[in-house]
Amino acid sequence: MVDGLKGMCESPRDLGAGGSPGHNRGMDNTVPVLTIDGPSGSGKGTISRIVAARLGWHYLDSGALYRAVGIAAGWSDIDLSDASALVRCTFDTEIGFRDDAAGEPRVIVNGLDATDELRTETAGAAASAIAAIPEVRAALKDRQRVFRQPPGLVADGRDMGTVIFPDAGHKVFLTASADERAERRYKQLKDKGVSVTLDGLLREILARDARDASRAVAPLRPADDAVRIDTTGLGIEDVVALVLDVMSRPA
Image (cartoon, rainbow, N blue to C red; front, side, top):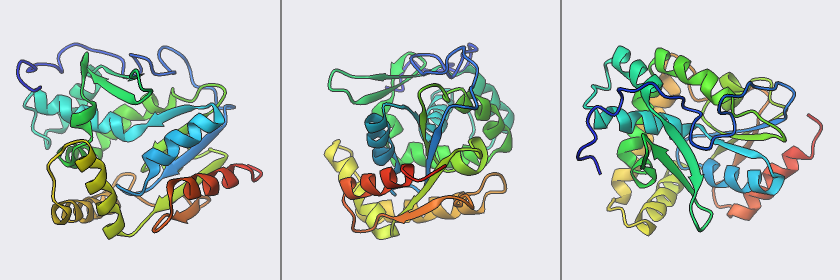
């Protein structure tokens, strides 16, 4: 997939292109937002998609934006420590979202389906590394906020409730033990045919937790007004019910 993709960060594009609800539209601060933050493997992506579907709201996978920039940077042989080049790549990368025939979300990077590559731990590590660069986070901030469109938005990430949508009416912070998060990722990746080891995933998750919690800009932490939910040992529908219960409370 990488062959022939050099120079993919060369043409300016809008990160809102390709099917995102916010393309070429302004943000409406009156639109309700539910933020779901948490560490890797906490289940926030799965839960966010289901809750968004139940509510009939838009869904923002903010991590996919960072992973997409990381992949585009890799395709262009950009050093992940080169902040200036990464900022240029952030603005120059076209990222789109669409559903396949089965209704599963696909992520399109510079016209190519990069969904499977986005879900690898390598892409996750790259996303974590570039997310620590303040200029990259600043470049993506407004592009995430334009997803706030009627009738509402479920925003999944690590700083949705603290930085991107601090005024959100409902905020949830999901967590789970590192061992359980590693097992979830192991099953998810094995089901997709990705060759991984459980021990390797656990090490990568612990390393990413440390990076995300210690970075100087927007470290991973619950918003002061977020409802914390430990998903260890809980099924998907149990967690969905807990999140929807949060939504039933006054904002």
